[in-house]
Length: 326
Length: 273
Image 1 (tube, rainbow over the protein chains, first blue to last red):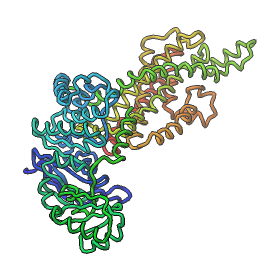
Image 2 (cartoon, helix red, strand yellow):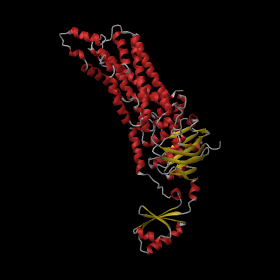
Image 3 (cartoon, helix red, strand yellow):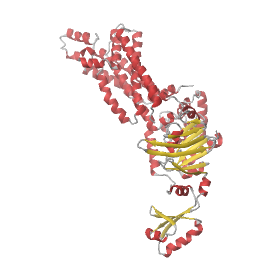
Image 4 (cartoon, rainbow over the protein chains, first blue to last red):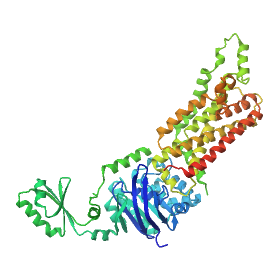
């Protein structure tokens, strides 16, 4: 058994003929941090739910540490840890109680569970809040507790479904530190889903870019970026149609009232373009150059952009989750 | 080592105890029931006060010789309270699904039935607790429940056994609904559809020999009737065991076993994510 996660041609069709997964293949080695990067609705959470035995695939097979996800469900559940997308800690219990409750699912003795819980609480700086009700925690504290609840039974593989969704920048950076710490200290295999480019780039050894239920490209962040041989030049001009006519010989398109041009060696090659445009009396208001990034990787393989940053929707979603919990 | 069934039940009970308002309401509610229903449905009030023998006739013929209507009503109300508490046992499962807690449970190596059983056990404890309050209040208030002078510890044990069996059966049935149902609204609609019919087709408020034949037939199949009649024998009649009691307990037992089997089967094969 070479791979700790071995997935072959996984498909999932939800009722109403919605094809969430269209044949996912994955081979993940022990100790790797693997990231599923893709926009909302790409099939990331569905994959996690199948691999964590919550739902069954329509077809295809998957093995976790050699255990079949349907035939050896119970064995799979013992060795995986899941931190779901929603905040799933119980508000009416204290942090400690949440951890001890979770450990009872794995037949861990109470004393041992408490000891482990204290270590983990210390790891994520929640020790002082251990005996407070979770309803008094902030969003970031809940997420940290959520993370260690998924770790209480010392799983071989940890699934993190959008671990920093909707968190503020500061909290997100801290979560990243904790996740990196896990890898360093415990040598865990971690499967992360995210739609934040920066997160995937910072944390993952290998990234699979997923779109519309299929992995479009896979590789280390550096490999992926070097596969892109162009820079993205974004121009904000006052006469869009006219400018596009002039740029007809370039790989240019318009998006959100801006022109996006793909060129090599932009430092050198962008100047003639600008000159041509200004010569034809096109007023350039703003220019932005993006060197190869996961965003351009995404653009290259899907034909769409995947913009970094917090969407309004994410923040709303987290706010709702916290409100609901209260 | 703690079984997930127990630790999850403990979770439910902790949440319950930590919600003081819920506790207060649960304590007040029985008062309403006894005094509202006790007055509203007390047909002995229809008898003119200058005809005491008529009143006794009604009490003896229809109310098993109870000293007053509340004494007859209380065992029925105990059964109804068990039913109504049980009906909401599934609500917390739906919340768990909404909050995503269920996701966590479903990815853990626990038996699926432990998720349902924790709701059933905790609802049974809650129901029994509330019944105890109702019982105490009914006894304490003047003009309330008059227990038979033959009432013994054995009768009390039988009363509790009946209540627990009834609570367990209905909690199981209603918790099972939320294994499949995903919204509170749907669950509430079902609860509302069933609660009053179950109450009025039982002997909780009226004796079966007061009912028209068709209703009497229906009420004989209602677990609330089995429990209410049994508890009346214990509390008013002072009889621990007779053939009717044994039959009723047997029915309740079969009801519980059927629910138990359903829980194992449905939670194993049909858990909605």
